[in-house]
Amino acid sequence: MGIKRLVVGFDGKAEFVSKQSGNANWHCFWGKLSDNKLSLSCTPSTRPSQKKSFILGTSGKDKAELYEIMDDKNNTLLATFIRLDENPSPGK
Image: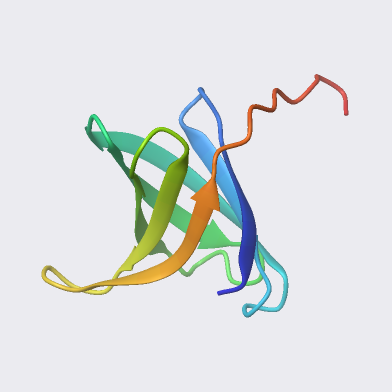
């Protein structure tokens, strides 16, 4: 999907940009699956009626992997991330 950055907020929302989907901004709601996994329900800005499900799992302290849920048994790895300690400033 060509994802360079995934932002997960404390308010239950997340977002990322996918280069393969025509630079679509994906808007997500997340929920906790376990201590090291979140489920994300997302829609792209280019096709708001399309909904996809993802899992964001952490491995170690600073690494994460994003998987697209294909069906009950298969997930596809889309991206790996390194945690950055960034706090967005209001109004920026």
